[in-house]
Amino acid sequence: MLEPDSASRAPESPGTPGSAFGPHALQILTTEHWSLLATRSLVYTESMSRASIFVAALSGSVVALALVAQASDFGPGFVAFALVLLPVVYFLGCVTIVRLTQVNLENARWVQGMNRIRNAYLQLAPELEPYFVTSKYDDDAGVLESAVASMGPMPRYQALVAAPGVVAVIDSVVAGAAAGIAGIGLDAGIAWSLVLGCVTFLVSMTLFIVWARGKVGGFLSGLDPLFPTPANEDDARR
Image (tube, rainbow, N blue to C red):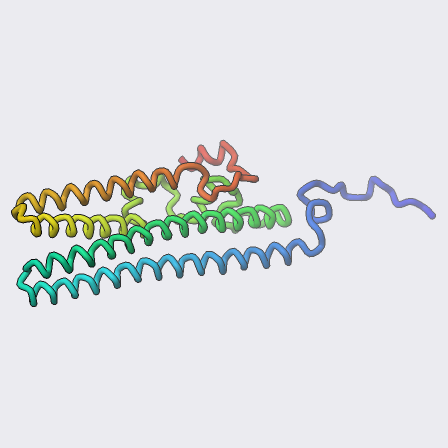
């Protein structure tokens, strides 16, 4: 038997399907991609549900307070009812913020996984890269490029635009209202009650900001990147 001419064989590189991937790689990658996409959809559904539960509870509490105020003419009964109800609403807001933050971190991990799969797609078919509008890199820059439509620098007010920031502001207003009502119940006067409410609002917002900064620091998904963005591409985006 004659051996085939070794010079006629195409050399295999790490990026070719014959060496880096098995025959079922594309099917497996596609299945995992759709699994991550479905998980992201569930995460967004939960995020909106938790925020809606908080807003619904707050709305019901405001209606209840209005009815009690009308019935008690803002007397001691109203103060007692408000100081029982508003702390419960504030607690619900706090746990909602915690869960929304967890959901955002989970979403970052699923985006990182999809970026890794996209990197594998482009190893299988490098010629398709011009048709991808999301990133194939799984570091911070790559995750943000795939998750956020804007490619420019994030504005300073972005934290207040996101769902956890919105809930944090509303929840701090609830805390300030509870403190102000407590001041009225202690006969501190309208002016001092307003001051107490404003201080409580600022303290609550400060605590939320400090807590959020500790959670957001570090890599977004919690996993070390396998395919970091090259330095020249990262500089080109700035």
